[in-house]
Length: 157
Image (cartoon, rainbow, N blue to C red; front, top):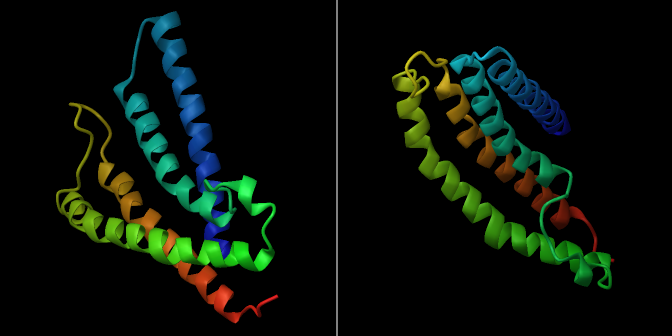
C-alpha cells in the first residue's frame, strides 16, 4: 500500500512541475513573443486538476489533513487515535464512498466518448483527467480502511 502512495506522491510532484513550467512557458510566450498555444494551456489545466485531486490522498497518507491540533497535543495517544478512527468511520469513509458512487457515471460516460478538451483544437484525453475523480476516493477509502484495521489491531495504551 505504501508503494501506491509513494507513486502518487511522485506523480503529484511531476504534475506540480508541469503546472509551473507550463504556466511559465505560456506567460513568456504570450508576453514576449505574442503567441499562445491552446495545447499548453490545456496541459496546464489537466495537470492542475490531477494535482488537486491526487494531493488529497497524499495529504491523508502523510497525516497532513486539517484538524484542530490545539486540543490534540494535550490528549493521550489513545484518545487521538480514537477520535481519528471516529472521524474516519463517520466522516471520511461515507463522504469518499459517496464521491466514488456519484463520480462513476460521469467518468464512465467520459470514457465512452473519449472526451477531450471543450476548446476547439484543444488536447484530447480529458477522460484520463476525470479518472482522477475515481482514483482519489478509492485511495482515501483504502487508506481509511487500512488505518481502521490498524486501530483495531493496536492494543489500548
